[in-house]
Image (cartoon, rainbow, N blue to C red; front, side, top):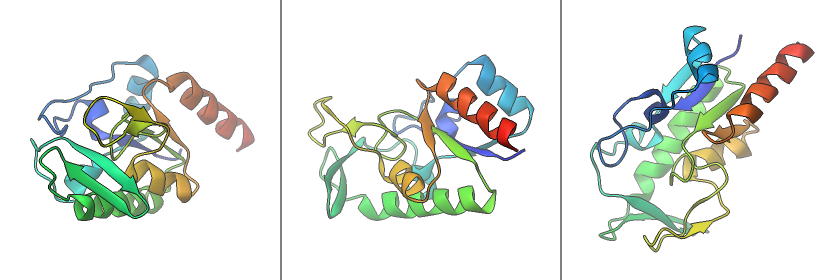
Length: 158
């Protein structure tokens, strides 16, 4: 059975920018974990950012610019983390990813607009975008039913 790349914070790892986690206590995730199918990653820490760290948001997409609230450019770390997450997904032949919604790295559908005001824009985070471009489907914690359906369809086709 193929692996699923998953945001480490969703599994309880305290790697969020504020040093906390986003533990996702869902039966389907627990079952996947029990099966040994989950590959936890935190693109931001893979890229060399510490925990805790200042919150960051994507300021622009073309060219990509990610800064902290204090305007520190953390783009290189976000890009490195995205590349490493993609490399791990490919190395372990991950069929998909389950990532933290709205994260500047992991958000699959939307992220914050860069104003640090809580405003969302319909655009993926840096790592999620890399995975999507590479053809790896990315789900978030609000799409567990879709993830389960995807895995069922994939297993039925195998």
